[in-house]
Image (cartoon, rainbow, N blue to C red; front, side):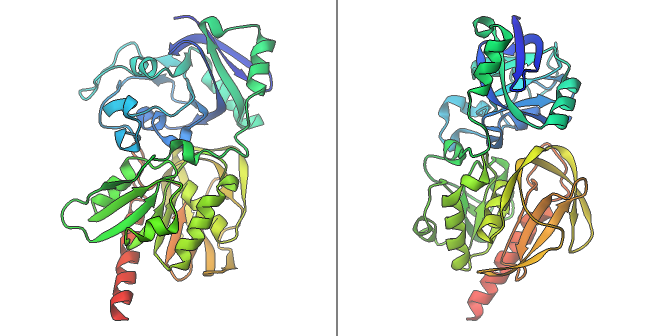
Length: 388
């Protein structure tokens, strides 16, 4: 193991040892509070261009397997193979496990990081890093090891010269290059078009378990592309980047709403639906990333423990109703910790979205009912169509 350094744009330097590939990587430093599910985190396209700091003290115990990745070959990244593509820009941990122990493991975490050329660092005080990011916010960063190491002032300059996440348009970088279809388990009850803004593998799987055929389409899809599929509804996926730059996705969403197609969105999709309804977005200080974040459903008062991964959010307040070109809408969910908007919906029930991840794995399953709620929306739309 060679020496390594995590360098932040404000000049803070944390020195440790290399973990994974040796070299240089740049991205936005963020932290995740999840105690489990590092493979799902690393392969989540929403983490594109981010250096993830793990708060769990030891990482790598369960190795790497062929089942848990959230980004696989159907997205067109065949180089990743069945192991799944790692999307994070870098990985920072305290202690790397010395031994992998899991019956499903096909290799070690570090071997997979090396194979996919992902630069990481271990042996740093991740508690101190997280406290710093909580105090001063997520910021541009870099991990350097081997020949990439240089005097601290030079490394800080490299970090500061990279673009900010604010204003970054990244959905097209992670979206599928071409459409593909996930068939349902059993007879297809409905067909939906899922706009891939960085979709996770488990999302189409959750639909398929409920008898839904999912046509995954690129982020560049047009309304005509979607209507050609004759879908019963549409879905907006999670994804990376600044939602304020996603104008094409917003215009597509407005067009879908104009067709009165039932619509469901998750995470980035929540921000896109919110923008289509007239709300604005902002960059959070350090975001929500983890599998233990409480959300209030203001229609019922129920609190769900949720998995989240977002650094941007919609402007708004709990229970706020507002007019849109598609009818009245409401801020339906907020975070119990800080009041962040966590959901929006049209009052007629035809479109809704949440900021968190009901498809979470690993993670809490409190919100999985939202998939059933969307099926009920499709049922209602189908019955209304049949009655005309």
